[in-house]
Image (cartoon, rainbow, N blue to C red; front, side, top):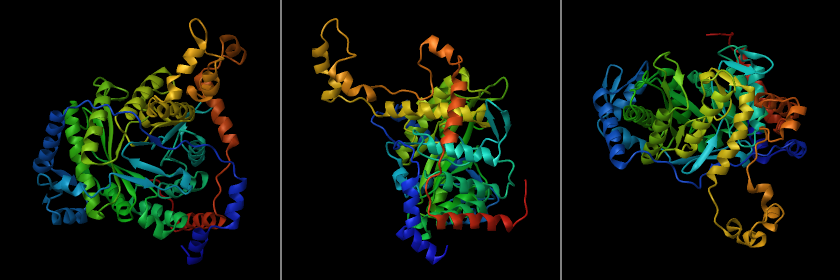
Length: 513
C-alpha cells in the first residue's frame, strides 16, 4: 500500500463523499443485544463433570497437530507433552492459556455504522458458508459460479436483519481454486459495506486476505483492530491439520479473529451421547484457542460448535433435532464459563427444497441459536440440502425470519406504554381496540411483520396467481437484485484493490485442485 493511498484513506476524499451522497443506502438493523435469558439445560454438577473429563481427554488422550513441526515446538515450549504429532496438555494448561483471549471484540466494517460487537449478550447473524451448489426456482440445482457468489453478497447487503456479509456464501467453481478467494474477498469489499470473513483454504490465501484488508482499512488499523472473522474447522475427532492451523496462525498474528470450531456429526465424529460430545467439543476448542494465544496473546477467538446428529439408517446428517439442540445449549454454557464468545446454530435443514421440512428444521435451529446464547451465527440464511446448496429463495425466506429473532431477543417491556391501562379504560367492556388512541400510536411497531409471507385473503391470493412461499421468495430475489446499488467506496481504494487482484492472478497459473 502506498503512503499516498494511506493518506487518502485517513483524510477521506471528495470523490468518496460525493459518491456517498448519491448512493442508495439500505436499512440494516443493528446486531442483536439480548434482553432475554439464555436457556441453560445443564446444572453445575454436569458442567463440572464435562470440564473435568475434557481435561482428562487433553491430558491422557491428547490431540494431533499434523504436518506442523513449528506448532509442536511452540506447544512443547508452553509445557505440553509431545509424542510424534500427539500433543498432551497437563491438566489446567489449556484453560490457563485460553485466559488471554478476549471475552468480546468489535469487528469493524468499512462502514462504521455496520461494525459489530461479538461476545457478551450480542448475536451477529451471517449467511450460509461453503456450498458448492446453488438452487433457484428457474435453474434448479447446479454448480455455483462467481456470478452466483456476487448475487448472494448483494442479497446479504440488502437484507435488513443480516448483520454480516459472511465468507464463502457459495463456492464459485468456474474460477480456479488458487484464485477464487481473491474474487470472493473483492466482492465482499466492493459489493457490500458489512463486515466479512477471510479465506482459510491455504495459509497464503489467508495472507492475501490480510493484504487486501491493509488496502481497504490501512495497515496500522488492522494491527490494532479486528476487520475479519474467519472459520477454522477442527478435523474432529481431536485433529488439527496444517492448512487450518496455518491460516489460524496468519490471522492470529495479524490480530484477526478466528472461529475455532469442531465439526461434529454425533455418532460419526463424536460419541452418540450429549455429555460425551460436549466433552470432546470442549477439549478440542480449548486446545485450538490455547494455540491461538501462543501465536499472539489477546488474539480474538470465538468458541465454535457445529453440531448435528446422524441418521443411523442412511448415515446422512440430520438437522433441527432435540439432541443437536441439547449439545448447542450445553456448549453455550461451557463457552460462557470459559469466558469466550460462542458460535453455533444456523438455518439448518437436510431438505432438498425450501419446503415444509426446511421450514421446521430451520425454525428449530434458529430458535435454539437465539436461546443458547450464540454470539455469532453462521449459516443464518440460505442453507439447503445439509449445507451442499445455497438457495436463493431460502436465503430471502430465512433472512426475513431473522426479523422475528430480533423481536424475540428484545424482550418484553413493562413501561407505561406497554401496560396500556389507558387503552383498557378507553375501550371498556364489549368494545374493540382498532380505533383507540393507544393502537393508533403503536400499530406500526407493535407487531413484527414478514416481508415475504402471504397474509392476504384467499380471493386476493388466488387472483394474484396462487403463489406459494417459494414463488413469493423468487419474486423478492429478482426485485432485490434489480434494485441493487453498490455502496460507495473511495475510487483510489477500489483501483488499488482491483490492481492487487489482477496482479496476484497473473502471478500464477490456474489450478483446480
